[in-house]
Length: 504
Ligand SMILES: [Ca+2]
Image (cartoon, rainbow, N blue to C red; front, side):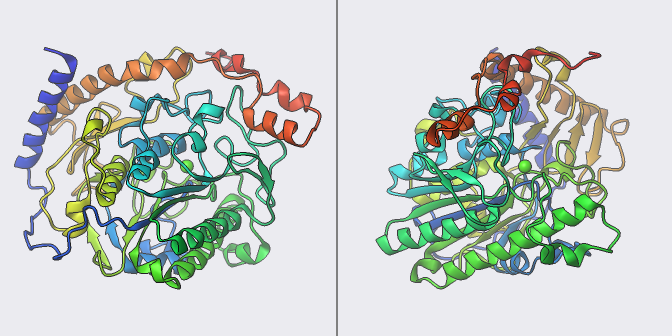
């Protein structure tokens, strides 16, 4: 029996097992009369960076104030059990391809292991076949070499920083323009760098809004990805007035700055929403807000969840997901079906009316359209796998059971040994593995089969030797005819990727 067949049989058994368990009541009320498939809305997809589920007042944060996110929340259909990967590039690759990041070769956020493999078909490429114009404003983080840039992966309009964050430098290809900062960053527009003015979040939101207004007047549907790097570290306060409300509240210095960055992002989001709502095409526009992983600042409000960014616990991977489309989606409604980032691709392709059946080997996610039409619609149970990745070079085998999880809508197996019942214990505090050895065993088998199947997909990027200069720095130095900085160059030697930390 092939590994794929074994895996599919194991998954079928587990799905049956899950269906026999009391998952949730099913309401079969009919959905709204308008069908959504092929309705071709404009799509504005907004994703902040390292903002967790708890970083908004509508989710109970006792300190942070986010009036515009709260308003969007009240206007949206919310997927309350929506899961992403534990870190940045992995989530982005899954969103853009509809499959787990490891199948994209993405197992890290640096070291060429953030590169989205070139034979993957991306969401904007598919949307373009349906007549969409596509744009990205913010963080890309799926490869900085020429062939990997968003203008080569389906985006018509580009305004991005390099690497995983503004100003970063890593060995090999991952890194941003030299000397870049959160204020007044130089950004890549697909042809050259533009020296922008203002705080990065404002630049991304406002330029996205300008572009949408252009698209809206042309009567062509558009797909805009607005992916600010905030509130990812470094924690740079946008201005003292944003930080002042959070001082003297018992927060760490980092937490004050972190909250100030989110409050500021909330205002930028509000400005963009006002622009959308002020346009005649606004009602034909689907706005989606989510974040890319849990928060990175420890010891702050976390909505009752365990873990932070980089962990397989819910605090690392369960994030907000708001879908707003006036008159077409129910407002102020929660949907608790088990959903994930891999569902975005098939959902948006379906809304755009694209036939993507030829991509059945790529797309693992499910269309959420039945849930958009009726949040109580039947939703078969499923298995989702999480793995942190980031093993040291050559040590993937040892990482098999490190910071990983496999789950259905009720049970979650963490690190191959801890079992949690998420329906009764969303804080993952009581290990039930001794009580349910049969469920542990089945989930372990499914996980092992998955690991065996996906690991070979990760090797090309693991083995790749990156460039000797970060391409973003090289382009910047060339464009502005600047001398190369020897100190920065010493930090880009790609061979460092293969050097294990001392003491190991
Ligand atoms: Ca992130």
